[in-house]
Image 1 (cartoon, rainbow, N blue to C red):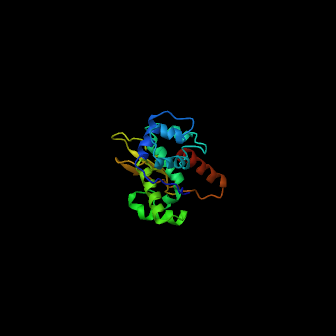
Image 2: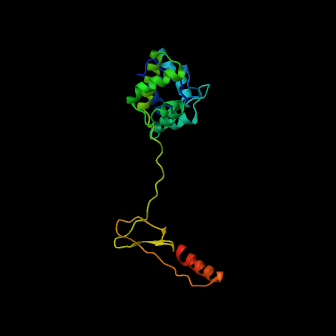
Image 3: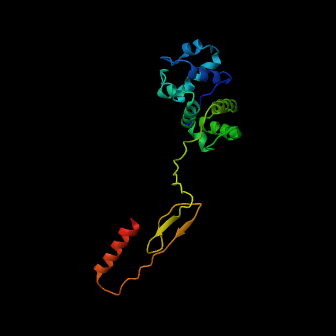
Length: 207
């Protein structure tokens, strides 16, 4: 996905986005509402279709759940980052962590994907990079596994199976001991003897 929308002038966009955060959500975010916020320049009107492509507004201008979530200042940057990843998904194939340093590649992507002229591709890129400055595009951190704390003086042991493979192990900066158990099987053809031995090993060591 790659929206072809762009602003001819971006200077008022940060203020428009801030008014979304600070003001009440309207029934319809349309031209009348935009002008009521004090943004009466014809160049500001392009923000409305951009907000629609970003998933902030429905096709009729109604604020979406994303619009309302963006109004939480603690989440605004992350919400916009998620919206950019959706509306400009093809750009993130260039670099998952896009910055202004990727401008030439971004311009080229707009030209090839949207058949834009040099001038329009520049404006499309400027619009994207302007929005990017206000967004947090970092992905959610992966869940981390916290190892149990080892008290000072505690010995951390790792059991190993009869084949010498570790069964349970924990990382420890204190001391890591391992031991191997060797099983000498009796010379017998009675299968029940072997079953009893391995059943006992499983019950007492592996569990």
